[in-house]
Length: 167
Ligand SMILES: [Zn+2]
Ligand SMILES: [Zn+2]
Ligand SMILES: [Zn+2]
Image (cartoon, rainbow, N blue to C red; front, side, top):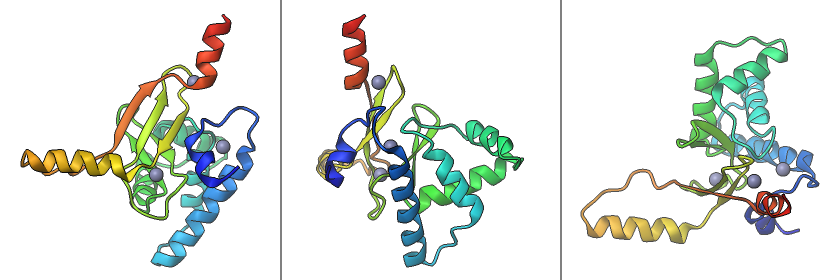
């Protein structure tokens, strides 16, 4: 499977998620090295927790998972680490869910469009700069200066549609 296919397709339960996590951590190491950012053990652990699955996780889920590790952490520490990961383009914040999801293609900064399954909460990122360009142009033509172009699209993934048909 090519890189493009892995980001445009909803990951089924049979996919090798360890590979996704490994790739995300490797991307993070490379990006932080290139930009001279410190990828501390805590930031790494929090990125790993965001990548627990393809479902977005909330800050409180992360706190709970850290506590389970035996590392009780104060909420501001987790928020700061998430902010770092967002600024490094490694993680996206989904406002509609008040939750965070790992970016599979973090090399270039982008707004991202997210397909969010309302049944299983899986998220797939469409990284289509054309969509952002159209929105920016239309906004410009109205004299509107767009600052956040992230799109959060709700719907049902293929697996959930198949499940519903089977019921
Ligand atoms: Zn995966
Ligand atoms: Zn992204
Ligand atoms: Zn689904």
